[in-house]
Amino acid sequence: MEPKKEITVVHTTHPLSQQLFQRLATPRNVIKSNRSTAQVACTNCSTTLVKLMTCQRCKSVWYCSKVCQTTDWARHKQTCTLAERSKGVLKLVETLVANITLFLMLEVCAILDLDLLNRDNSKIGFDFPFMVRVDIGIEPSNVLNFINLCIDNPVDSKLEGMIQVNHFHSHIPGKSGFAPLTPKRMDMWRTARAKANTDGASGHPLGLLEFVNDSEHSITLPFRLDSGARHLAKKAEPFTTFSALTGKAEKPMSVASCMEFINLHIRADKQNQLKLRTEMTEADKDTVKGVSDRANTREAVVFLREKMRRETLYANMPLPE
Image (cartoon, rainbow, N blue to C red; front, side):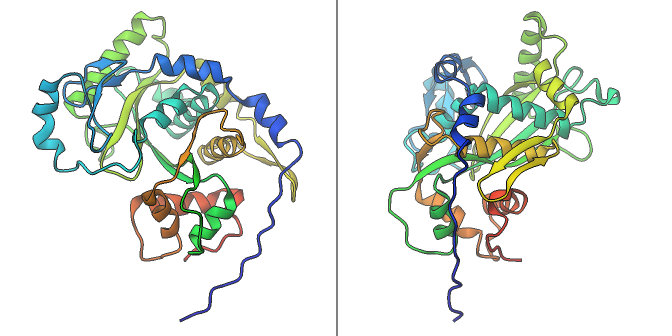
């Protein structure tokens, strides 16, 4: 048995960290206001309401009536598993979507990934939908706890975690080998596209956005790309980062650097002003522990490894080849 490697960790904080965070942070009252208008679609019939019934076991599907819940049970029972988190991840996803700063970056990711600045792609989001999948994870807000989980050192039973964006993927359903949208999702897109057209947003591309958190369940919502995101993507100004160790640095705008901005912004929120922190579950911890096991090919673990390889914070952390 190989002895455990000794790892020396230098933990520093840049003196301007909180000042920069506050300059970019969406105000708490704006997030609260946006969350109050969030709507969820019934898993069975796609009816959209502010308040829906939630499956009390998995917290990952929603119904507008008992009839819809009963109708969907034969399908849902095959994947329904007990949720460790009292409200699943819905509340965290709703809060992320309600955050203007962070959601804008997801819009920029979509514009870049789908190459929507290219005139040849001008029909995307208008004549037919696009689909975006964002894989999220919960990892320790304290990077020292993250390292300890990775190397299987003891940690407190209760760990504060935070939502992080680990993977971003977009495609055009029904093209390039991708499956077409299900009838329910196609209905969701058509309804949202028609509403955008009548609400003065006929010139904005619209698709669907799916959030996945290490399960067979996902949260899907209409995803409109507004002019502000297009403007940022077109200017393509680099991200400027400040480190207490390495100083000032710039990264070109890309899907990867936009995701890194999202993750660093959430990490900088020491007082949980953005309400994107939560207690970690055992499943969350197992995902972090899994990155050091090369035999672990669970999708959530693979995506976390990818994130560690591309983001500066994790540059010197050991990973299996």
